[in-house]
Image 1: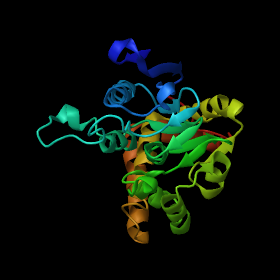
Image 2: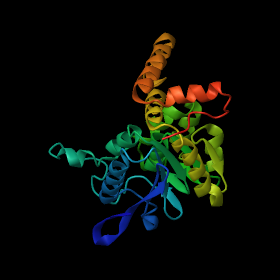
Image 3: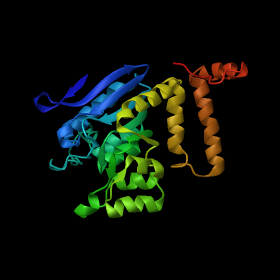
Amino acid sequence: MTRPGPGGQPLVLLEDLGGGIARITLNRPAKRNAMSRSARKALVEALDECTGTSKVIVLTGAGPAFCAGVDLTEPDSSATGPGDGADERRLTWLSVQDQIWHHPAIVIAAVNGFALGGGVTLINSSDLAIAADDAQIGMPEIGFGLYPGLAGPSTQLRLSAKRAAWMVLTADRVSGRTAAEWGLVNRSVPAADLPGEALALASLIASRDAATLEWCKRALHEVPMHISDWSAALAYGEAVGTQIRARTGTVAQGLAAFGRGERNPGQGA
């Protein structure tokens, strides 16, 4: 399925891979998948279509790049004015990140190539990430006299202070392999293996109960980003368990299977 832009150009590809897995491919390879307004609209529409139908979304790019961030050739490309409506506000780059962050599906970034500026933000907004060993990941904004407004803080929340400072202050690109060593992505693999590795990870996660995945995602966001007190965090964890039990019978089924000695219980719809 495609999301056509001006002139019929498919700016985003949306594929149903079965088993609760969708793949969204940013499809402006000649522009290193820079996110124009039309591309952002296509991405938001694809995310909307995945709501309630996909447990896992694999997010990747076509061609040699994952994403070069917002298309800076467009005027006012990352923001909307005060008079714009709600639909337009959904298309700001910040809003797109929030929609990925709060999407009920688990989002896996499959970083196939260049991830620059806002491309780093996409990695950080995703729940998990696998990168090609030779992917190039960096924030060039300081070269323009800017602080990377979204990639900077999201990286500072993901990495240690010194590593985040290195990326912000030097504009050096790190490889996918280094990004994995630093913890910016979960792992790196040879580029040829990336699609299969991302699909295998998506299949593993999609085998789990949908309600459990959604509440685990919420918990991973809350602790420690919003809840850092020890006792409050443990109490929140217990509350999440209560919410999951109220929404699915998978917990009881999984515990029963565990009692029968099954090694990996709890997989299901």
